[in-house]
Image 1 (cartoon, rainbow, N blue to C red):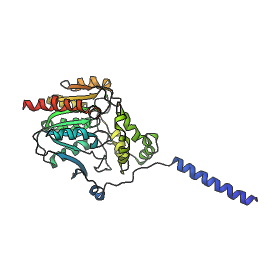
Image 2: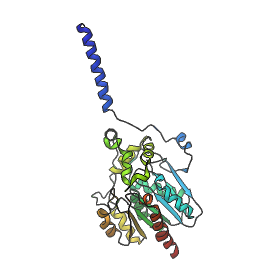
Image 3: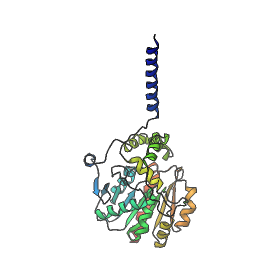
Image 4: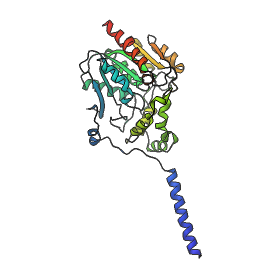
Length: 321
């Protein structure tokens, strides 16, 4: 074999090796779906409201009911996380609203700063667009705790009950003013090239104390990751979290009926880490701890959760009216 041929083979091997290296280091970008009019027309359930910032997906049942329940989901899993509670409330005759936050589920993925003001305004505009003027029982799961705090602090007259479920917002935080920090393309690229991104769907199972009854939960999450702008929304939400102490002070001053429901074995928002802040920030709040449950007690122990929400919180408040 002559030198020229050997050189050609060696060069070809180098090219193949370089391509393989590039392939191994390339980003596994799952975001292929745009939430446009075609996307919205493909959604067979729920409805869309066109708000000032974009389209919001929602479910609104028993619209003429006397008592209104509004369910706010958490950090990344959208309103389907409330399936069991939504259906239980509907069966009991409550007017019940659940919706997807911007950047999640079927609502628009915006290229904006995702902070508590964005989510509070989204909730306000949605309620107004649906002409919901009665005081509401507002329930916030996990990161939804920040949204309901922001809303209740601004509009205490619109609150009948405020219910925190394994909520974020009671941890100690040095940030007291809105950061309004945008997310760079470099940050998005680095995240998509990380193990955390690759394991996001599977990691959802760790929210449960016992995930054996929820097989397939991670597969459902994989569908969320296909929407363009999903990672940007999540990173922006993390980057723009601020202290909620001022909001909690206003809620306490308004003397709103406040309740907290927590999974005993929550490893995402550990109760012992935030219990003192819940008590000190909202001294009139009442805490319910649900055994054999992690971060999602309304799913793992639905019967007990529903008993607390409907019998010990909502019905008790109704009796006072």
